[in-house]
Each structure stands twice: as C-alpha cells, then as structure tokens.
Length: 341
Image 1: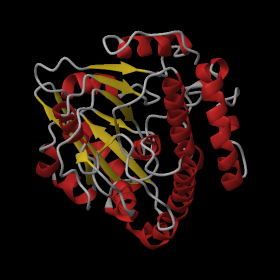
Image 2: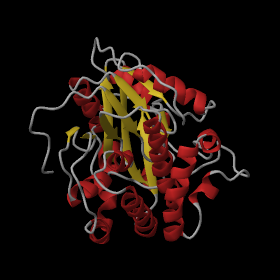
Image 3: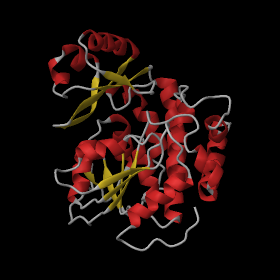
C-alpha cells in the first residue's frame, strides 16, 4: 500500500475506535434513536440511501419490536449497513456535543466508518460500497465463519488442522491476553470446533456467516473492483490509522479497499502505534463496547490512557451515558459548556 505515514506524526490524544462484523445486535443504538435528534436524523439520512439499494429499510429491520436483542443478526445485507449507520450516527452525535477525534481507527468493516468520519470519502459512497459488497458476498462466497480462539497465537502454526484448513485473521498477544481469530468454510469450522472442544480450548464463534479476511474472498476481486474504482478520495481530515497495515495512512486508493476485505488485521500494532502518537482517551464507538477491555490490556505499560464504551448490548446507553463520556473526555482540555445531543 502506498502513502503510509512518512512524515513526523501529529499527536493524537482523542481516538475514536470502530468495530466491524460480529459487534452487531438487534436494537443497537435504540435509546439514542429515541432521545437524540442528531442520531435519529443521521440514521434516517443514511437509511434513505440504503432503501434505494436494498428495497427496504435498515432502520425497520434493526428496530423490529418483534425481534429480541439476543436473536442472531447475521443477514449480511442488513448487518453490514447497520454497523456502519449506527457508528457513523453516534459520531455525529458526539461531534455535535463538542467531542471530536484527533485520530480514528477501525477493525475490519469499522475502517469504512473511520474513513467516512475522517472525510476520506463521502459517507453515502462508502455505504453504497458496503451494501454492494454484502450482495456480492452473499451471491458468490460459500458460507463459513470466524472463530476467536483463546490461546497463544503460536498455536495456529503448531496445529495442522488450523494452518491447513483456516486462515489467520488477527492476533492479540501480551502477557495478560492471548487470542487469535481464524476464518474458514463451514465444513472446516465444524472440524476445528470439534478439535478445540476435545482439547479444552475455549473459543467463541463470531456472528459472521462468511470467512472474511481470507483467500475465500478472492472470487470477488474483479466484480468488487467495479464497485470501488469510481469512488473519489481525499486526504484524511484527522489522523487515520489503518488496522490493515498497523499504522497511519496519509492517503488511500482502490487497493486499500480490497486489502480491507481480503487481508489479515493488525489491531494490536495499530493500538501500539496510537499509543506512540500520545493517545490519552479512546472512545469505543463499537455497538458491543468490545474495545474497552482490549485497550486496557493492549496499551503500553505505564500508559495512563483510558477507554470509554458508548454502547452495550447489556445495559442502557442513552443520552446520560454519552454526556458522561463527553464530560470525561473533555476534562482538562476545555470546560464543558451546555450542549444539546
């Protein structure tokens, strides 16, 4: 990838983190949808574009009162845009309150949200790309999935079943955190889960029905190029750290979007890079609040940086929670004035 960071990086104290597939759940952001004009209007703005492409409303699908929060939300055509829409709308709500990012970083699909927030590309163009991508994946890619395995990442290379039947997607390896994620077809997934259970290795299957970040995506290449080639790009308005490359990008091109779909994720390296930039406050934009715990484990020894979760499937996360986060994040940088969310 061209245009990796070459010049002296700018200090980035407030970092917004964005998640991808696997973080979604029905009714995510529902409290904000009811309480925040900014959140609601942004969701509706994006949903109009989604309806033109899908033929039905993502909002109606996401907030269907006949579907519980714990029920699977794995239909890609809706989960893909929903993950983008909720996180992008949440950021607009925080920005309206006066909390703006100095840097952004995403995990997998979350990088698309980071790209929109950093103004690399128009949010409607990115949403359009994501919906077309979801259609292509559902049409062309055999079903499979992704497993988070709670073991030392070196185990991947020691177990033939793993390195011959799956692709290594990401790793997290520190003294207090050992985990790696693999992608595989449904048949291989069944064999891998049987092996892990037999050897008492804890794993978690992500709510994703396709083997992203692996060679299984290769059949999409030609048709996907026709989707991403027409897109226009600008230089990021804030520091843009890519978890595909584990460092800052000054510019992106078409190859970046393919790598984002196909290549492994270097999230731990990205957090280390952000720590070196002087990150002090991480705002976890993910619907599941999944990054907050990881940041505390991955940040540099002696780091005083803190992470704040904005949403959660387990507790109410409405306006009161957001106002508390804004106050904590802005403390010491400026006085918090009256604001509307």
